[in-house]
Image (cartoon, protein in one colour):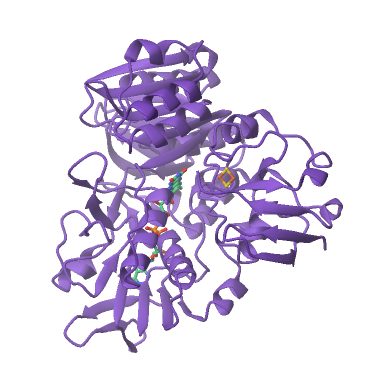
Length: 411
Length: 106
Ligand SMILES: Cc1cc2nc3c(=O)[nH]c(=O)nc-3n(C[C@H](O)[C@H](O)[C@H](O)COP(=O)(O)OP(=O)(O)OC[C@H]3O[C@@H](n4cnc5c(N)ncnc54)[C@H](O)[C@@H]3O)c2cc1C
Ligand code: FES
């Protein structure tokens, strides 16, 4: 049996690990279009961007790990088409590979700025190692950086650039930061944290163009209001688009992501998909959605491997994620969508608190700032469908662990 | 290079040489201990790199910092003297002979 994995990221690496851990003895080929071993992306907007983590520590595993697992690594090569009837993928160098099972782990790409950009050399995405190589040269104290998009990646980059002494402005089209992904309380907390340190947070600010040249800056971002900003460097963080076109062309079900079932199987039983490129069942929340996180890539890599090996389905966690800005460690478990009220535990002013999102008395999500116990508890409570009393949650004299144990025992 | 002795989650025992300059998590992962998931990649945000250090060794390691303590202390397998997040331990020659067990999944 030959398993071909397309895409060289986190989901691909986990699929390899789980296949071999599960006893898979057949042939394994990884085709990835980046010219490097699968690596971790989260440090790209954190320690690596800051210069604290050397590039040689970004790969998820060293090369011998792949050799020991007998993986044929085709790096710097791209799969251009899937021929399902012939069970074969086409490569960009004219070659082809026959498969018995195919795993699509093609990830996502940055959403391009939907405005005219006259100075592309000064405008950077933040997705790949190559992107950050370009950005790092411009990260010099005193320079003016404009970040388009007040989501997690934009805000992490803002924190890093501010620490490096740049003059940072964040443009967010919505009326608050993190509008798509967080509660107004958390948005306001992060607005204050950035503003207090001198990062200019501009909400309700819509970019209409990036012009070349300008008053002392290299480029001029222009806003819908007519206002013209001066910048040396522009970074975009306005979301990602799943790399699902090839799957669609091959006739697989695609709906803003490659549609998969709980086993990470696509509409073709021989083809699996994992990670940022998928649209998956949200087991503990209902419905389907795209999850853009390391945990999701790892979980679906495991699910795909187990299904290929015909082994029992591994446990499915609730979604979880983390983000670091300054000295603030944010950890999120669950999905807040569909919740009807929020309870605060701890002190936002002290930079140590957690927001609990409820639908009725069922916990749906927790956003924990410097509050690891609340995060760990949520990861257990949400999948268990546990019920919690809102007043008890707000009472910090009761330990989170004890509160969680009682709720789990009752669930 | 220091030699580390590992009891894996399935009970199997083995040893490997860890490269100074890495964290213990990175060294374990690189040596093929795939039971160390280390999902957050060493950010002290996930507790999936949890190991139990041999009691004889627990005292010789630098103590847990606050954020490590916060995270590991609420895991199910927590052991006050033995629990460590391996991403928070730097590999040095002083670790030569260290014995550890990969903690059960939380
Ligand atoms: C800056 C940044 C910070 C982040 N921070 C966090 C964080 O703190 N916490 C968190 O949980 N998540 C974070 N994420 C998200 C996380 O990194 C992703 O969810 C994860 O990397 C997804 O893994 P993946 O394998 O699905 O996709 P990717 O890592 O995108 O890998 C896909 C790979 O496949 C390649 N590819 C695509 N098409 C083809 C083809 N046809 N042929 C060959 N190769 C192909 C791509 O070039 C890419 O190399 C962050 C992401 C970024 C960019
Ligand atoms: S790797 Fe996540 S806490 Fe150590």
